[in-house]
Length: 140
Image (cartoon, rainbow, N blue to C red; front, side, top):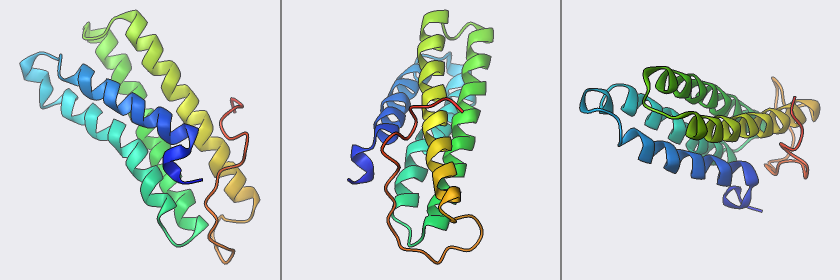
């Protein structure tokens, strides 16, 4: 299975598109400040998944998953800021925040499985980047 068929990638892709559309509705003075920041962070989630899957080692994949997780956290904070500033209603905030929580759980599970397989500091094992079958189904 390629990364485009993975649930975490599909969810990150869908969220990035929704966030991009949301950012275009911001007031003009925010489109190039907060809007740009949240767009870059949202797309960073899925771009780092794809880049990590294209690397030559699971150690590198693990690192890119960590970057994706950091970007998911960044988007989550920005969504809270948007809500506070009145740029986002409660319903859309809850929808996007829930999606980011799931993405975070999926990335965390995938990363923890790589570490449990011994892909922490020294990666000398094979280059099979597939996530575990139940990746992301557990909140950790």
